[in-house]
Structures are given as C-alpha cells and as structure tokens.
Length: 197
Image (cartoon, rainbow, N blue to C red; front, side):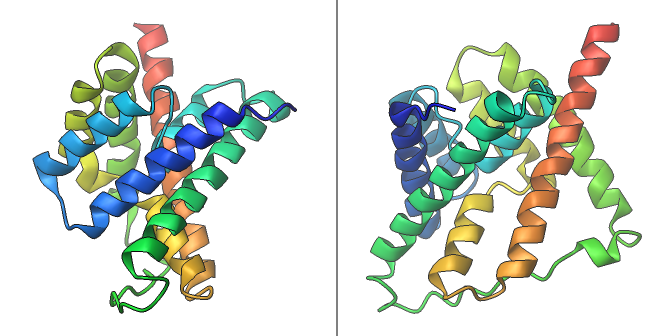
C-alpha cells in the first residue's frame, strides 16, 4: 500500500485545526463554520474520525489494503494532528485542562440501546447529506444539528488520552472504535436504503 503524503498532511493539518478550535471552546454554529473552513482549506481531508469511519463502512469492505488500510492511516494522522494541537494549547502539559477520560459505555449497552439507535439513525441521515452536497457548509451544519447523536471529538479524545500518558486509554479506545463503527454502520444502512428506493 502506497501512502499518499498529501492526504496524510491534510488529515494532520485539519485535525490539528479542529482540535485547536475545540480548545477555544467553540460550539454550535461557530464550530460548524470552523469545520467548513477547515474542509475547504484542507480539501479532501476527512478531518473527523466519524467521517473516516463512515467511509470505511460504506466502502469496499473486502478491500483491506485499499479501504481499511488507507482509512486507518487517516485515523492515525487525525490523532497525531489532534495531539499536536493539544500539546501546543497546553504548552506541552504546562497548563492543566481538567480533561478526564470518558468511561467505556459498551458494558451498559442495554441501558444505552436508544443512544445506539440514535447513532445509527444519525449516521444514516448525515451520510446522505454529506455525500449529496457539494458544499462543506451544508455537511458541517448537518453535523452540528446531528452532533448530539454522534461523537465528533474522537481524535481529540484519543489524543488527549495519549498526551495524558495513556490516562483512560482503554476506555477511550473502545469508545472511539465503537462510536465510529456504529455511526459507520448507520451510514451503510442509509446507503442500502437509498439503493432500494
């Protein structure tokens, strides 16, 4: 598998920018505008793990090297970009952020069944918006609207755990993979429904 350095740099730069913006406390419409600007500046970059997971789940699932390998490298670049932003924002750990790892939610799956259903639905709906609209603004606004049902800070959470000397890394890793995979399955469901209609 050949590594596309331009794609990796775009992922790294985009994730850096988004994580740095998260550190400024932007939310809602401000965050959506910042994300749209990042998507335009780093054209072709997924920037957020949720997008990479949706690409993985809706791509050729049998093509391990092309689909999973290339997208897996994008996920790594996103974590590196987020880690660099966190290190810069905290002056390499000199500023305490109060970050704490989120507990793993998978063991309580029965208690979280509606959350999982919401993630599937959000993935199905948002992926249709993302893949049909040519402008980053629409996709970013769609993420802002549906963001409560999806984890949009996956790279930031992973990077925060890594830069905190692995604090909560197991919980963070499991949540990151499961959140992305569930939303990705939702995107796949949306694609399959669209194919049937």
